[in-house]
Every structure is written in C-alpha cells, then in structure tokens.
Length: 370
Image 1 (tube, helix red, strand yellow):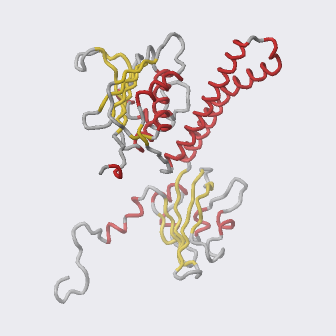
Image 2 (tube, rainbow, N blue to C red; image 1 turned 135 degrees about the horizontal axis):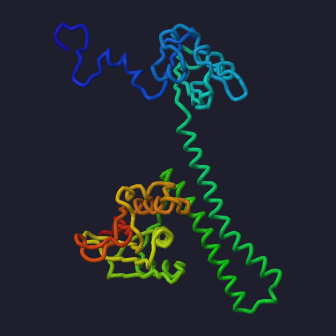
Image 3 (cartoon, rainbow, N blue to C red; image 1 turned 135 degrees about the vertical axis):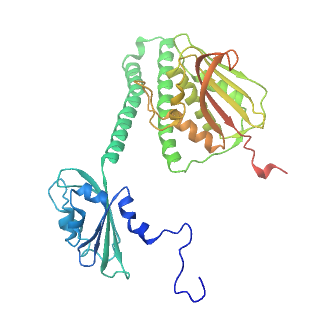
C-alpha cells in the first residue's frame, strides 16, 4: 500500500470488480440468487435459458414465481421446499429433479445462507443444471446391471442344470460322467466368484479403499497356475514364457486377478494362441506382456480400453476387466498400457495382434531394507 493510501491496490492476477461482476454468466450451471425479501436479485444467462425467462425482468420478482418448477405430480418446488420457513438448522437443499414449464427435467440444489446459526435465511443461492448427463449415467448403470445379470445367469444356468440332473438321475451316469459334470459346476462357480470379486473391486477402486497384502510371490508359478485354469477352447493355447525374475512383493490374490483378467480379455477379444511373457525390468521389478494374434487394438482406442464399461463394438462382457487391471496395477505402484504385437522388428514388423504391457515394481517394504 502506498504511503497515505486509502485502500489496497490491484495486483497482477487479482480479479477486478468488472471481471467478478460478469462471473455468474460464465458459469456452466444456472444460478439464481434471492434475498431476505424472497425476491430474485440475480439470474445468470444459463439459468435464464434453462427456465425460459428474461433475466432482467426476473429481478425483483418472487423466486418461487421465477422458477416455476414442479415435480411429476404437479407439486410446486416452492411449496415443497419452503426455503425460508423450514427447519432453522437447514443450510442446504440436496439435489433433486424438477420440471420446468416446457417439460425439461432440471436438477436443482440450493444453499440457504444464514447470518447467524439458526437465524433467518438472508439469502438463497440456487444452482440449476440439465438432467441429461445424469440420465446418461443412469442408462450406463442400467446397462451394466443388465450385462452383469446376463453374465451371472450363464454360469448359474450351468450350475443349476448339472446339479439338478445329478440329483434326479445320479444312478444313470458313470463315475467319469459325474466327474465331468462336477468339474463343469466347479468351473462355473469359479466364474461366478471372479465376477463378484470384480464388482467388489470396482467399488473399492472408485472409493480408493483397495487394500493390498504384499508378500514375495513366484510370479512365474502364479502365471502358470492362471493359464492352467484358463479355458481357451477351439484348439487355442495359452503359453507362458518366463525369464529368471527378481524378487517382487505383490498381493498374490490381486496378481492372480490381474493376470486372469488379461488372459480372459485376450481369449475373449483376440484370436489365435495367447502368450504370457514375464521378464525382469531393467530398473527393477518385472515386465509382463499378454499377447494375442487377433486384429489388434486401434491406436485411437488404446487409452480408452482401460475406461470403466468400455466395450468394442458388439463384444460381450461387463467392460470392467481392463479397468480393474489398471486399478490393481496402479495400486501396486505399477503401470499398464495397450500396444501391438508384431512379427519381426518393431520398425519393419507386421502388426499381428494386441499386447497389454504391465510393469510391476519390486514392492519390497522399506522396513526390510537394513
């Protein structure tokens, strides 16, 4: 402040009053502000568009009349919410769907500003947005529920069919036939367990509550165990190529899940034999490649394949497999990316399939470094 000055100077980067005055119209959401007299003092451009009103004419008008929102049963927002006369402990009206005069669905939330705790409402600040985004999210969730129901029904049908057959016609089958049926039931039960585990892990990844129990794991042996359990069918194979590996600390169950999802993804969406390669990373840790001989992953889709619910074309599945892989790998401090499998050297080779590349760091606890 200069000597004898009467107030602070504007400094570089400090918004000026003119810029702040225009800020409400730059907000992506609609904003309506009403004062203690229940009349509107501000309507931004987005709110005027959503409500189908003239912003200038709305100023000074009762806020309930300006909004004019109703629910599906024709009840008015003002009568239902009572922002000025409701409980004195309220400071927020949670987001709810209401309908404008033209039938458009809007999401509304409001802050009830009180100058003193439990005092009268001095200002109501209302935020509005269109419900189309939430509707799209709801459709995605509905699609996921339908897909999961389908994925659950398939193995459940097998379990129910074989157990019902064995219970009703046990004496008609030989021991080898019974054993085949029981193995099929066991495999279907494993599929159900993996799907339920995947769904639980999606919730944990989204909420950042994923817990790891690291320990030294023989990754080569674990990879071979995964491939033994895989069911390629149609004359396809899953081969494992393992170099001499350094010690790596991982959660054994999560590592099994990572590799099982990658192999299942390669078998489901690729073609030909699947190859799992494990080799030491130059800087420590282990590199893992899972390759197939299919059409490969288009370059523009290589970052999207790890998004939740992402599926290519009319392919089946929940669209969660690679999303879970990414979450589990990153929880270990590693990295994952999609690439291509080539025949020959990288520059002159011919693209012949997809490759998912995973890096897992050593993960050795610092407490053991002494």
